[in-house]
Image (cartoon, rainbow, N blue to C red; front, top):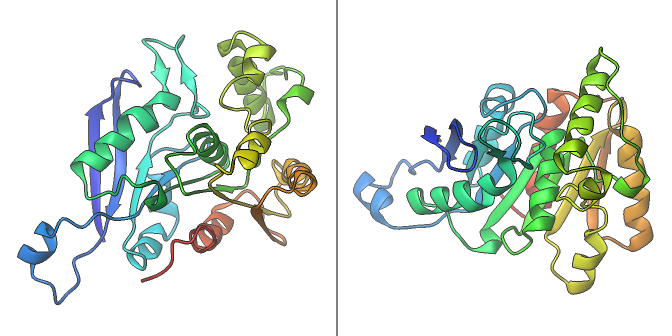
Length: 275
C-alpha cells in the first residue's frame, strides 16, 4: 500500500493538522499509466484514535495497512486531540472537531484522492474515544456512512449521569475532568444531553426511519474502563431491537492486541470484504 502523510491548515480546527492516508496498491501486472489514470473510486474508512492518541496510532500499533491492502481500501486516520470529536468553540480560536471531519476532511479526501463519495462506500470506526466518535458521526450524519464500528466503547444514557468531578489524580480522574469540561463546553448538563455525544437517544429514531448505518460493537471482557458500560448498552440494544452486531473476547483489556484483532473483524462485519 501507499502511505500518504498530509499536513494542512484546517479552517475548523484553527491549526495545522496531520492526517495519514493508506491508498490502494497498483497491481504488479498493471501499467502505471493505466492504473493511475483509470479514475476508479475506492471504498474509504475513516479510522479514529483514542484518548492521548494521534494520527500515527493505527499505523504504528496495528496491522491496518495489511487489512486495507487485502480489500483495496482507502483508510483515513486524522488527529482529534482529546476532543471527543465534538466542537470546542471556547478553546483558543476554536477547535471544531465535529465539523472538521464531515465538512472539511471528507470533502478534501473525496476531492484530492480517489475516494468514492457514495454513502455505500464510506465507513467510520475507532477505538475507545474514537469508538464514541465513530458512533457520533454515523448517527449524526447517517446519510454519509454505510457502517460504523466502535471498539472498546459504547453509547451511554446521558440523562442518567451526574457531572463527574476531577479529584486530581489517576487516569479515571483525567477522564472525569474531560467530561466535566465537556459539560461546561455545552453550557451544562442539558446542553450536553442535547449534543452529538448523545447517541443513545438518537438510535431509536433512526431505526424507526430505516436510516441507520450498519453498526458493530466489541469489547474485551477484562476491560476495566468499558466492560460494564458495554454490557449496559448491549442489553439496551436488545431491548429496543437494535440491529447491531456485538462481539467480545475473553481476557482482553483496553489494549492494542484486542484492537488489532477486532478492527479486522469489524471490517468483515461492516461488509468490507477482501477482494
